[in-house]
Length: 310
Image (cartoon, rainbow, N blue to C red; front, side):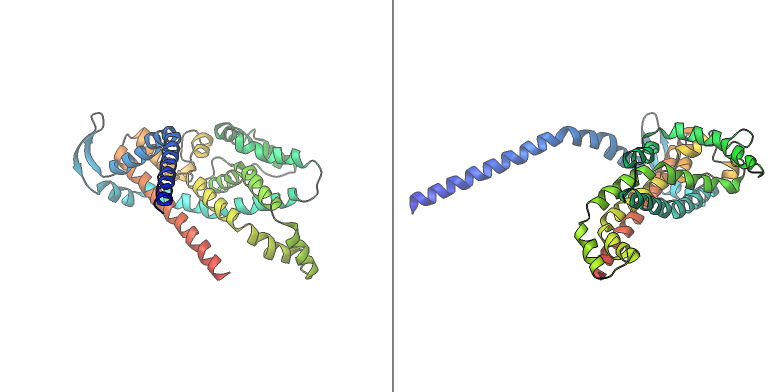
């Protein structure tokens, strides 16, 4: 018994040493990536959060003389911030569901037996890998009132020219359309991979039970796509909240006619780079972080509640 006990203790110690060395090796492999993450992501987030409470400070020497909530009170009372909030929420409300719906629609079409499927996949994915600055320049040229391609087509069919870029009522439809178009290929690829991963036996069983096409879609396809729908809904909402490049390039460094394209990120950029109001920009950035975090958390809670109902 004594020898067996000694062997067992020795084996346990060796197992503990092996596990400890394995954990240390894992941390050593992760150390470079963690160092980069902490330096360029975690620390800037922490620093911008703290800067939101600076009310009087020296930016060059990083010396803070007064702390407080004055910056947060300022942005809540600022008319431009309220306009930016309104525009951004309207953009997210329309662009996010339409983006996901259009991506799913085209993915279903590509998942069927159509010709030239690889070609269409490449065409739809091309806008996602193209520079947004280049895309915005092309769109501003296409929507030009005098020599734009869109007005040229309209005039060819006998219509009147439309002031796409100078009419404040057209700014939001243009941004919604651009948000849908630029991420369409990415969502199609994700949906297409998920659709191809659904077991065909589910559809066969549904056909045997007499389910029609729409019934199979609602009771087989959608439930199987729930994790992908949650993932894309979160990433799409975050992407819409971060809209900036399109407005900055298309409207020549302006927030659109009559501030109709002013978004939260544009507001932060304007305060930080043009007015040098760093603490106000940090407060607005932290407010945006809280808003995205709350919406993401709400989406997770709703998805878990639906799962419990199922």
